[in-house]
Amino acid sequence: MFTSELRYIFKHDHSLIRILLGILLIPAFYAVIFLSSLWNPYQETKNLPVAVVNTDKTINQGGKKYDFGTQITNSLKRDKSLHFEFISSTKAHKYLNDGKIYMIIKIPENFSKQASNLATPNAKRINLNYYTSAGHSFVAMKMSTTAIEKIQTSLNNKISRLYLNDFIERTNNSGQILKGALASATSPEQLKLIAGKIQPLNSGFKIIDPIRLVHHDNTHVRNNGTGMAPYLMSVALFVGCITLNIIYDTYTPHKEPKNGFHWWIAKMPFLYGFIIVAATIMYALLVFFCGLEPIQVIKTYGFVLLTGITFLSIVTFFNLLFGMTGAWLMLLFMIIQLGGSAGTYPIELSNNFFKAIHPYLPMTISVNAFRNTVSIGSSILSETTIFSILFVLFNLAIILFFHIKNKKTLSVAK
Image 1 (cartoon, rainbow, N blue to C red):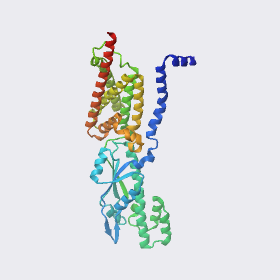
Image 2: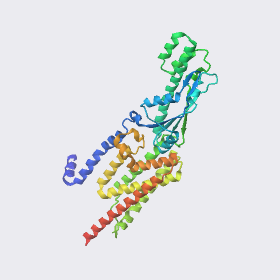
Image 3: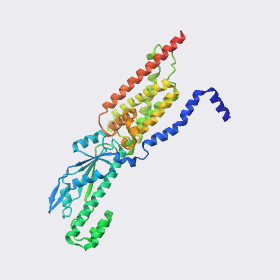
Image 4: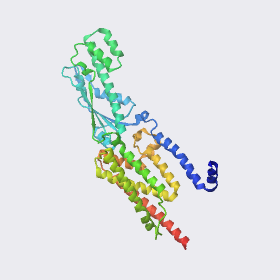
């Protein structure tokens, strides 16, 4: 039975062979293309742009110069764990709001002054402010937070060592034993043990943990689901459009059309009505079942509808033009967009191919728009304009396609 099926296919249905060969490659394409875009993102964090703003003022106290801000920036210039950019505060915040960088580390102007007073009885921990934008990338925010915590630990150790070493030298406390212990200490716990042996030490363990991180994020991302919603809404709508084109006959009119426009009227309004209902159900369930809370509820819903009808216009055109091959091409195009739209990891962590195509993908535009309406609150005028133009252009192309087909049908009938 199995061999007879194969013989029939190879003998009588060559178009089915092409379709089956295409489907045969879909799992491979899905796995290879999508995974290649995020194969090892944590190894690529050296490309993740982070701004460093140094407002610290150097001071001279007790015959010693304190310039911790400069020391920190010089240290970060040598650090390749992230792509550090040393720019002004104004430019840094603009880049953060535009999604061009993912974190700002701001060294306060009184950093050195506070650091020089850590050994006094009224010493206070030093605030190190850092700013993220989880709305642009929830994953990048998590990566940046991990990075700043490592920087905090490094600064704590550096400042603690400086003070403990200075105290030992000034008091000759316990001679060379403590100096040797300090030189070999590799963790805050070891430094605390050394500090515990140096008495009296007025500031206690504030010297050991002098840096306090202060996190600022103006975007509205409550959880991972909120962060992933812009990407998954885009994917879901594109999948819905492909599925509709595969299952439903988008070509055959049930009444002979007079021209291409009448053919379009006969088929497309139903398809758009269908995808609008499907998109509405998706959005309603996300809000009322999953608990999605967009900053701009109406704008989000409006762009859900615009995305649905725009994606449908693109997919339907290629399906009409190439038949089942067009649906296959759209499936392949969707897989490419999964890797290139930066819905999961920041595009800076991907390979050069996906970086190059990223700005031009429809799904990139929808993900950016949804991030703005769900979490950031910025304008989506440019994204709305682009999708409106695409909707009009592809529908004109569909009408032209129907017009050409209709003329051929009429000429054959005559």
